[in-house]
Length: 159
Image (cartoon, rainbow, N blue to C red; front, side):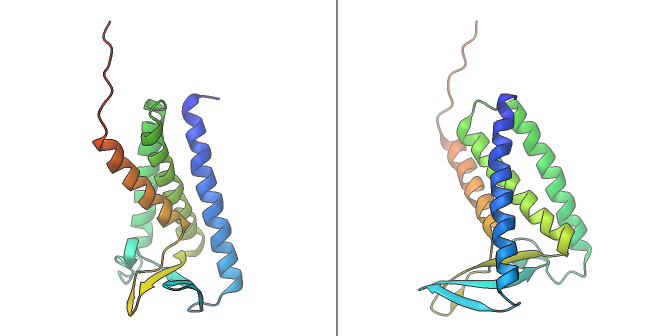
């Protein structure tokens, strides 16, 4: 097994966890149901036809194909980067999380025409848009990419 392909296992783990949690919530909840889990944290069932924070959710349907195409192109670029940089663990982990999240949400778009969201965080009367495991993986991956970009580059030996 090539060294870079181990990072695909991380992506696969994100996809599996994302899909299992979405299937569970969709089986247990009706659209709009809400279960208070802890102060400032609910489980809900929401459908998102747009992108992050429901961006373009009411755009008329073209956004499904657009966001699906973006996910496919981004996934191809990420796999290419993973193949080129398998020895950079933080960078590769970040890309793997983003890849798994992008593909997890892509599966929803293709299968259902929307993304299933179920995590709701709020403070008093302020509610963050509902999200899911895939969104969380993308966010953590993006934060890790930023963190990695600020790390001191390692010296390259020239011989």
